[in-house]
Image 1 (cartoon, rainbow, N blue to C red):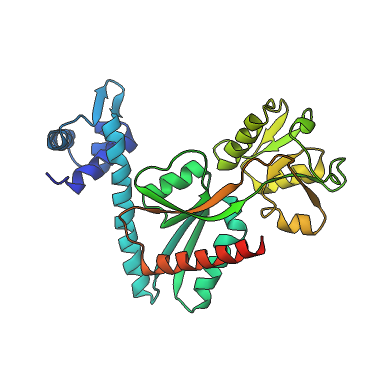
Image 2 (image 1 turned 180 degrees about the horizontal axis):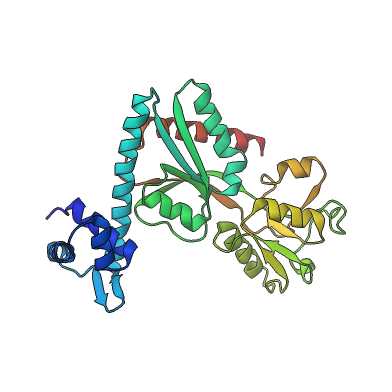
Length: 305
């Protein structure tokens, strides 16, 4: 039996509100009517999607799965309204891209510029987010595509990924740091130094964890974490702190001599920068042109490496 889209949206309302009473008030329907709708949804799929309690209503595992699809559905409807509005304004449409800081350094801006140079009347939104938020945004339809590091975990089955680049990280220090002139350095030699680390919810954090584990080196006792690229850069440039990052991300600072990049003696593995799209959901013509420009830009960057 096909699912009723209206009931999925109602389930999303209950999840957002935390109770039938609040969701019914927000949707301007009666609570019995909302309860009846959820009962029919559960009957149609043969599983419970909500657990009621005195404190409200909580999603079951099946409910959480359906809410993900409900979010994608509402995003799709919102996008349809946006596309009509933009068409009335003489624009081709909207392109929404989720990207990691590394992808925002060159790859994504270059592809957007390439598409824009061809005279397209369009609106583009680029969102820089932590990796877990990027995946959620792609699966719920907030983003057309996502460009970010692959990460150590497998992607969900509804996501397709394609490798664009491989990036090898270096140890970054200020230009007058005692390590700045070294040809290479091991993680063991960095013990006792203060560190600046990326957000724990990023693929870069997990990449650094994997490097420490591969060399059997203890995690630093003293470190600062930040989700701000500007804060990370300022701390490394202004103190004796070290960090591990992509030289692409600090390209201008390295070229200006403000920072020094010291290769790891045992780099172990490179990070894959990948393009992610949703399986079985075709891209718009605008998003397809962006992907084509993205692939061409990645090929150019690979040729420079």
